[in-house]
Image (cartoon, rainbow, N blue to C red; front, side, top):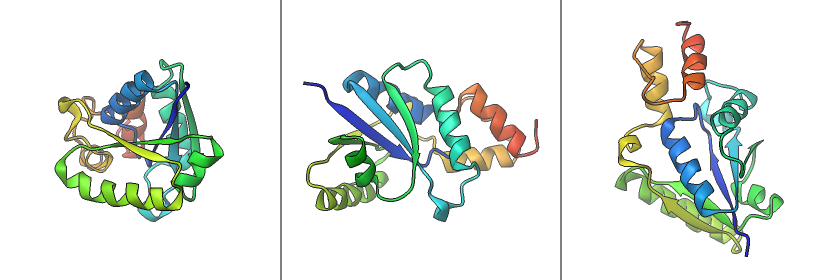
Length: 161
């Protein structure tokens, strides 16, 4: 039986932690759709199309990965792509309460979709997109947190190219 999954997120920007989870999900599922959320309320640094492009570039080595942008409900994206599993990352215990609430709401909205939680490799457990953006904007070195292509875009966006 073929099982495919959805890995949604804002990915502003995509980090090595995201890549780790995408890579691991790609080994667990036949197909993984990485869904980049528009998330206008978060006021992302990169446009939706820029984020989609960066995720595609970072995951180009993984043949069973598809990348798409979306706005609206994540469960609707799962339905549109005929996906029964949503993959979510948990970096720390503090992530669990929100993710648990989100997974229960998603199940209420579509009881045919299950949420699976993955934890990143411990060397990525402290990395978040918001911290990476802040470090880059303050002149810090982000090379250990993101793919070189993402680093280049971050530096350019922060006027450090």
